[in-house]
Length: 203
Ligand code: DAO
Ligand code: DAO
Image (cartoon, rainbow, N blue to C red; front, side, top):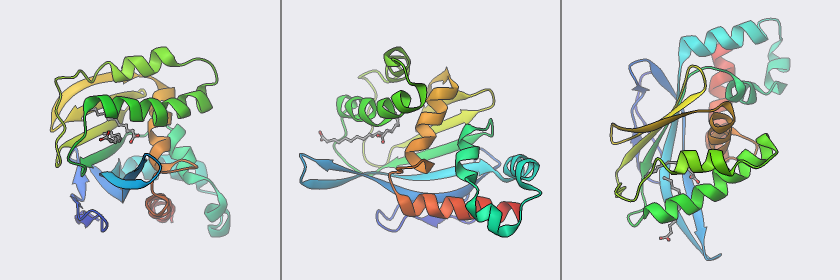
């Protein structure tokens, strides 16, 4: 539906639709453990995709499966590897985020995935992505960052509606989505909700 949804742990509300046509599939929270002891809420996120794009893609692939077979199919994984446009909207919750700590965090989170899916050395790709975020950007609490995977595996980033840059790479798109809907997602409840939503889009 087109209804706004609240991420309960942070209280952040996500609009039901973004980019004119992408509907909300699920919301979650990105936490991080600091110094092995303190848990901080870094940002809340919502995952969006165009419903008719999803239907077209999934119907093509799954039309012949029974409901049970569908439950066992890895629909989310197929979505990650597809060329369907997906937007992940992040709303910053933590009030003291520096660009440097952001860069360190995603060298860790995204870097791990690039290695996992790409195999070889992906330092250059990681650098291409992180070098978009120069030190002049400020991301105080409430900032909204959109990570949009567009047709042709282009990852476009905006901060508070302002375009920051885009990188064309299937591996990077796959790795970013993996943070939210992959095997070890930041918020497993969010992934579960998204899975269910996808399956119900087919049936
Ligand atoms: O204050 O040093 C600190 C801790 C900051 C934690 C940073 C986590 C960053 C997570 C990535 C955010 C991407 C928008
Ligand atoms: O949560 O570990 C993570 C990685 C999130 C990747 C999102 C990157 C967003 C980049 C924003 C930079 C702001 C200057």
